[in-house]
Amino acid sequence: MTVRPRNKNDESPPHPLPTPGEQRQSGGARLAQVDALRGFALLGILMVNITYMASAYHGLGLEDPGLGGPVSEAVRWLVAVFFEAKFFLLFSFLFGYSFTLQISSAERRGARFTPRFLRRLTGLFVIGVVHAVVLFPGDILTLYAVLGLVLLALRRIRPRTAVRIAVALLAVTAAVYVLLALAVGQAGGGGTIPQSTASAAAQATEALRGGPASVIGAHLRELPDVAFLLLFFQAPSALAAFLLGLAAGHRRALADTDRHQRLLRRLQWVGFTVGLSGGIVYADASLNHPESAYQLFAMGLDVITAPLLAAAYAATVLRLTHGRRGQAVVNALAPAGRMSLTNYLGQSLVCALLFTGFGAALVGRVPPIGVAAIALTLFTAETVASRWWLRHHVYGPLEWLLRAWTTQSIPAWRSQSGTRSPQP
Image 1: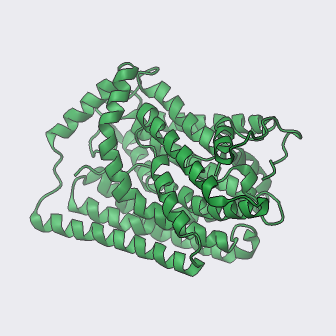
Image 2: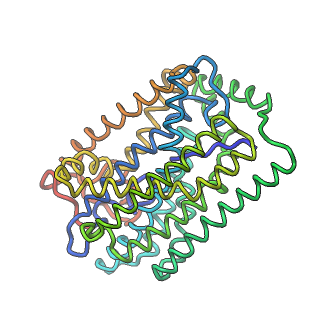
Image 3: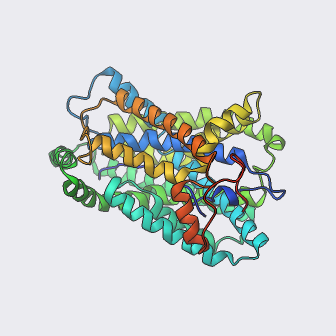
């Protein structure tokens, strides 16, 4: 089995999170730290997704020919340890948290929540399908749209129950991986990458360097494997994070994080010790022992430890937003988070133009250090562009379209006061 975990919001984000207008405290003040968290998560998701778009060999346990060496190996390790399988959990948590804010917004408006939310999920699913076929098969919008139905059905459960279900989901998923690892180990199998895998990666590289029809064809051939991985690797963890976000949303945990500074510090200590340790094991297994029982065990361990590292990242960002330079952190990250759907798809578009036959066809030709530099440059450009756009507009372009579909109305386009947040 080839293991290739991929990382990839009511009106706006790449994952069905709310638009700026719906993301508000009960008193009406915008939760800027939630935007900052989402912006930070966008960076992490880009750092992972771009590695798959830049190389058809990534995630297969094989080194892309001509892109080896100690520097490349070090970058692959850093991405695997600190980024892979972590940041989609942060988005999943924000999905669940924002879901409760969407419900509150609908209640204040006197609007029926369920039809609006179902339209939103439908819009996200359609966007996700187009995204997966044309730009990036690792799209997760479709999975989030489907799991959103589960969250809708569970919206009235108590916070404590939501936490218990989330913990159970993670524990059962980890146990399944461990059992699979034991079975593979006892059978004496695993640890060998078939020659056909390398041949398929080489063929995929050539197809991705071809014209638009060739690129789309390569994406379509990859979709079944991606769907399998989304279902069995990401779906249980994503749903667990949804439920944890739902519980936190019911408690309005992010409305006043000053009350939770002690908890945030604890999350940092645990996440950056236990979570990071799990990330190191995961990276070692994925990069050095693919297709082995050890890799299956490491994936089970990662199911438990990755949420801890994601929580440590979130706690760090939240503490920074309340520090001496908190406003600078918010100003840097929040605009990108407010336009997360536009930015998420924009990332894929730029990467497709760079790495596939839609543009420069650089797939397999840029070393990992160059890929990481492109990701950082692209995210910086997005933060600047997002801040400029939101000075003049209420929503990002795709956020506006999705909101129009969700509410069946024509939202405001131009901002009336430059930087004022839109009303829900």
